Image (cartoon, rainbow, N blue to C red; front, side):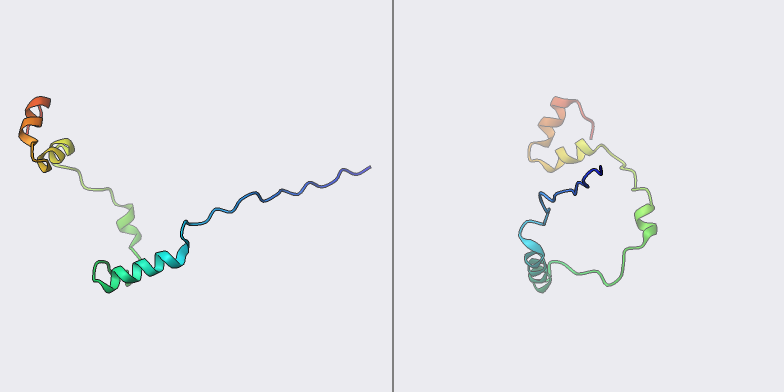
Length: 81
């Protein structure tokens, strides 16, 4: 007696919401408006493999500097500029 072969059933297909055409249309509109530029050549692999530069200051201090009440918040947290 042979056992029956069980085939996997497809239950769902994952697709991008809105479809690719809408994303292409949006990108084309942004490019026409001069807000984005499509790449002219592939990104060099060397750039992707390089370590990111180190920050010279606290990220939290930089974020607080962008806020109107940065001085008051910095004092409250004891963070140096």
